[in-house]
Structures are given as structure tokens and as C-alpha cells.
Length: 264
Ligand code: C5J
Image 1: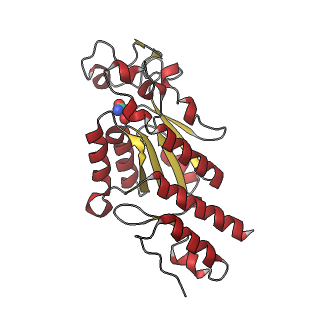
Image 2: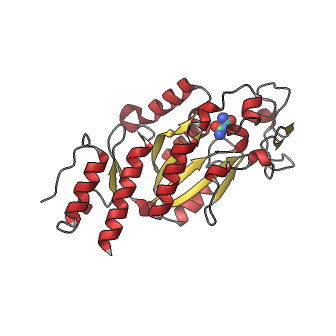
Image 3: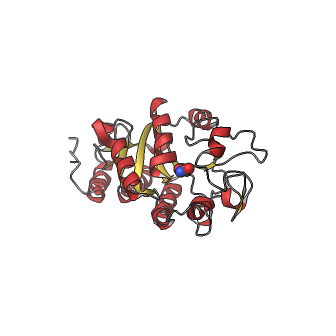
């Protein structure tokens, strides 16, 4: 008999039930399409780690660190910094489960040849992209501020996508990398929820990826944009994807660990 796991049941309990049934009922796994259920909005997400990548968007020093470009523009970086610990926990669990991790960085070539003039002058600020900033030239590849914060630094072998736009698919090889690795699901975190996270999820959705956005691992300088950014993704039956807290994803990864252990 295939046990029923209600979406209302706490995630940990669901995976404990799965673990108990694993030895007796292989059909149980098939019943979930080979995936682990993550309690999410608007309905549970079936995470198949073999076909999934954790995509961490733009956790760069210039956006997150005090004294960086983001703060120089008058933004409250604590709104982004609250995502560091949840991201660390999720990244650790994801790496331990053996999943693919991909990082992105927003920025431009040192000669700014890939910087559209419209992007350069937007905002009419005294200091703009390419100018000297508190951590080197602003959003220029190779500069200190452009790099990823040390807390979430890419491990050897984890692809880093340098993107000139807000979306991680625009003018990058992200789609090719995902296709070559057989990835169909993206678990998305990073900053900012309303800009690069939302743009990337929409691009991914149009390319056929199932995106699960991890709510507490995303942030915006504007709390209301964060809130609405998440709501827009899961609205209308998941028009762009799913949204869940990191605890639910980590609980699912614990289930993967149980499955791997049982398979030995
Ligand atoms: C990102 C931005 N990463 N807000 N960039 O969201 O300009």
C-alpha cells in the first residue's frame, strides 16, 4: 500500500514516514515521481535532487556588505544580510546531499563593453557602474565588491555565472550548463527578491524549469518588494514557480540522506 503524506503534515514527519516505508514499499518512491516532497506554496514541490540545482543569485559583497555599493546608495543592507545564515544552512545541507550548486554574480567586463548605456546612466546617480566605489570599480568583474561574500563562497567545481543583466539566463551559458547536466529543477535563493531573483525565475520558467524559491534565503532592500516578489511567483497556482522556507527544503534533503543510506 502507498502511504499518504498530507501536505499539512510537518515535513520532518513526512520524511520519517518515508524512511520507515522505504524498505517495505519501493512503489512509495515512484508515487512521488522519484522526488522528495517539499511543503511549499501553492502546493508541495517534488524535489528530485539528481535533476535539481541550487542557484544562488548575486550574493555579492557590493550588495550585502556594510560600506559597499548598496549601502552607498542609501540602502539598508541588513535586509539582505538576514539571508546569509539561512543560505549557509541550506548550502551546507545541499552540498552534503551531493546536489549541484551554481552561483551567479552581476557585473561587467572591465572595459564595460557589455554595459548598455541605458543601464550605465539609469538612476542619474553621481556614481554609477564602472566608477570607483568603496570596494573597487562598481559591478566590474575582478573587483573586490563584485565577488561573492566569504560566508557563501563557491567551492571548487561549483559553476559561477557572470551575468551582465538582471536575469541569469541573459547573455550567459547558464542554460547550456543546466541542459548538459540534465537539470530540470532550480531551487533559487539570493538577492534581490524583486529584481535578479524574480527576473531569473521568470526566465527559467519560460525555458521549462520548475523553480522553487526559498523565501528566507532571498531578500530585498525593500521588505514590501520581497513580500510581493514571493507572492507573485506562487500566485495563480504557481504561475512562475513555488515558494517555501529553507527549513522545508532542508527537511527534504534529510529525506534524501535517508534514502541514500537505505540504498547502500
Ligand atoms: C540584483 C540589482 N542582484 N538589484 N541586482 O538584484 O540591481
